[in-house]
Image 1 (cartoon, rainbow, N blue to C red):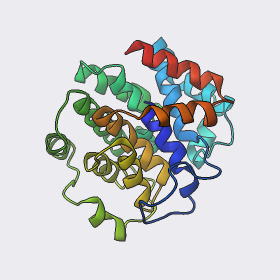
Image 2: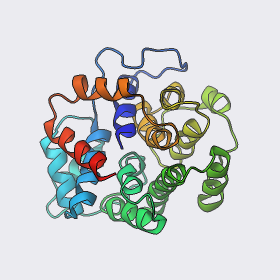
Image 3: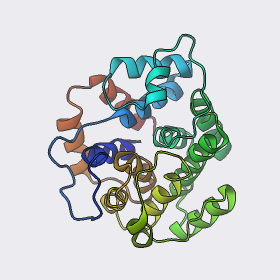
Length: 257
């Protein structure tokens, strides 16, 4: 889960200013946590404490306004009652890592939790699939499966084309906010990585929806490689100091493990 938040923060300044290189300061000037982090933490809170999904998600997002919420989701935050709106946006996948984290020994439970927190907004089949595929990939990484085996299982189960390398994807890739145009690429960035940081750099270097690509690749890479203590400490001491509610949920999540 922290892998998603760190990836989100690192990619935050490149969402509107895409780059096509892995050579950049990992935490650049003006980095911050965005809607990806807020929604991820909301999902963790929902699943940790068995809270009502829609109302809890709304409460977290209202408490952290102006974090880059998408148009339809930004309106949904204030809907009463909140209803799903058929989205297949990549927001379904960027927030779902706690489903795998909290159910790492039970795939059915992880996928069920993924559906529970996705269908409240992203109830289009592609939205549900993107969230499930992300959850499944993280879960497999927690089992110690090799990147090659994870690639094979995800491609077979979800029909994603995972045959291209990061270097092959990068030249023609563009900004895409759909699950189908984000999830396969983000998974590839994680599976091709040699470290957590390398996965995030892969994701940002595609030149697309950088924070979300990194928020999807990040937790897969966290399960594969772990996260260096230095990145954890910088994230908590610099970028989350004004968000004690987020830090509290993170503490609860990692104690749960």
